[in-house]
Image: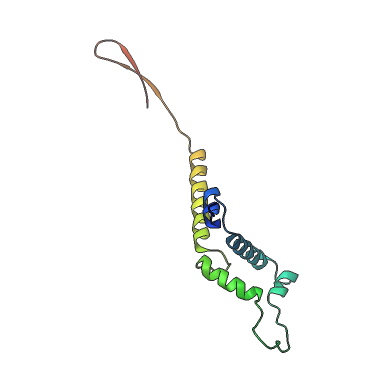
Length: 127
């Protein structure tokens, strides 16, 4: 029996790898925390510094370190934590909405004109 690699299955069914989904969730949570009020518990917890000595050996993986690598992988961000791609998309959507709104508010007027043709038949045109 042949073995099928996970990558092939994910690609066939259009499923993203779990690592990508987790990265996306961490970044979404980080954005949620940044948008919160200044004195909120989640924001205080994000900026919390613990005093004391760390234990011997390899340092444990921290959420802030993981978040830092996630941000590097996902691309450049602004001060609000949004990717610059997302920001451009939002601006584009706003412009489209404004254009649609303008089109809705603009009134179109059509006039029906009856013109006498040289051979004495009536022509009806819409301008």
